[in-house]
Image (cartoon, rainbow, N blue to C red; front, top):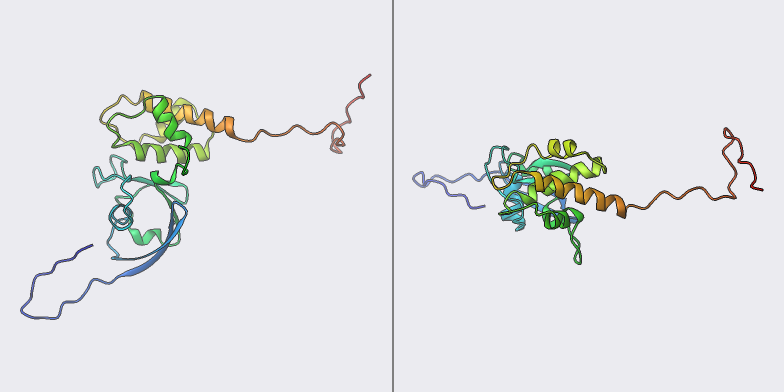
Length: 197
């Protein structure tokens, strides 16, 4: 960040104090020297160069700047970068792997959940926080989780369908619980099954 001061007739300028913070972003460990007043959104966009985190309102109304901090959806336009010290940050760039999209990204493509795309990163990260906590949400659960994110293009229906599509895919990918093997003894408080004839 560039700081410009008025020249006060040769008086020695005092600098803004800097803070060193350590954090992880999308799995990469980072150290940054930041002004205490720097917003997390500005650190992510200008400092690190990850521009998927959008700035829409600067007042937490729109949700375009939503990121995950330790898995929790946070609006980065009102969180100070120094508050991220010691935490894990996930941005939309951290959802996909090098070879495939995250199911949420696929869902938005398959169900036409985006138009201009400005709100999409924040929507996806709010949805990821929901699906991490609740892998089988109802439509009402999805609408509630996304209620802090505004979309100025759509009627939200396809966004909700996209999240439900992703939830179904994630559930299908989850390893199924294996049934107990037939030769394992029954727990002590349950009667043993009758042998088959």
